[in-house]
Length: 146
Image (cartoon, rainbow, N blue to C red; front, side, top):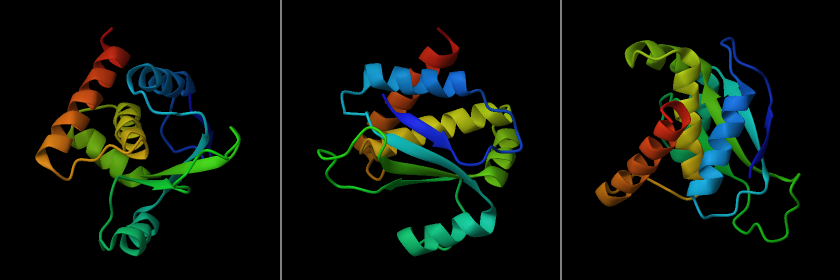
């Protein structure tokens, strides 16, 4: 299961036990190795827009970016930082209002989405979207409705 570092906490409350539970659920559902460490980072609109422009050639802000630092994980140790999830705190606050969620629930929703990207799931094609959305829904239901 993933280990993680929260580089700087956001202005809203987050519960690390819920983050642990998300990782545990994903560990049990997705049959892909998840034994390395990832960083959770919060940035402002401008900073994440610059990352989005530099790494994805999309010159606009976004809610979360997921970064892989290695293509092959065979020689990594558990404490090696293999991934990073970069969240836009402002976008989380705006989307929470838009989707009628608490700030932290919007954040948990984005963690699920980002982790699936880290585990090589995507949503560029319709069939990929359906697979990823079904996994997100399954994880969310197990997390909050079980």
